[in-house]
Amino acid sequence: MTGYTVKQVAKLSGVSVRALHHYDEIGLLKPACVGANGYRYYGREELLRLQQILFHRELGFSLEEIGRTLDAAGFDKVAALRAHRARLEAETRRYRELMRTIDQTLASLEGETKMDEKAMYRGFDPKQQEAYEKELVEKHGPAMQEHIDHSKKGMASWKQGDFDAMQAEAEAIEAAMAKALVDGLPADAAAVKALMARQHAWVSKGWNREAPLEAFAGLGQMYLDDPRFRARYDGRQAGLAEYMAAAMKAYADS
Image (cartoon, rainbow, N blue to C red; front, top):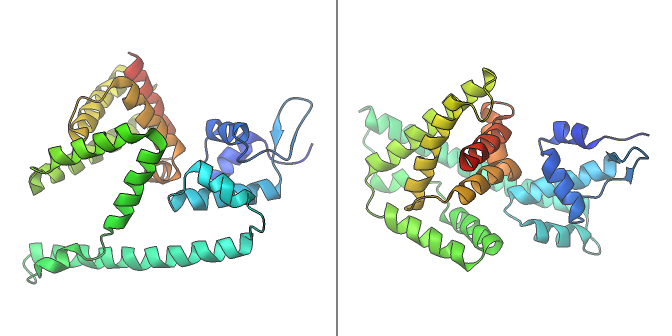
């Protein structure tokens, strides 16, 4: 039997085995064939389709929208790739602008130059945040909009120090979790659960309410399934997204 197994595709792409099984179940990415041993096997066409799925996820499409797009009559892979490239070029320009904003802010803070207040906000894209919030509402229903509004209401009174403290705590937790993963600690180890207690408190503060444990575990699974979050965590330490998801679930279950 030729082709790639689910585990091999997962290793190649960074998409979890669980997500690949889910894509198969909903008809988004079917294997080329299923062997007599029950294993799914994927060929080059399936790998190219998975690449398209990941590109569309990066651009904020829901799985349902991706399925409709890829299965539409006349879908052109080459044209789609050119469109993806154009979007990425635009994002690259925006990130360069953000880097200039950071450099100018650092120079201002270090006393080298004085920064125009308007220049502090060059490169930020409020539409991107709006698109992400829309995706959450479409996926989870109207109640999600209420949660988003409640979270924003809580942050309305935050000072810059509050945002800085949140960022510092997130960085500290992620660094400690990456070390725990490298050290081989089980996801349900006492030390890891202590870190997840901090993660739960961090999420609750951001949500402006006590995060329900089921929702906390679901958030961990989203870190694993969403390519944007997975890239963020696995970019820090290979396997960290899966480790975070398992640790958050273990904390919720306990």
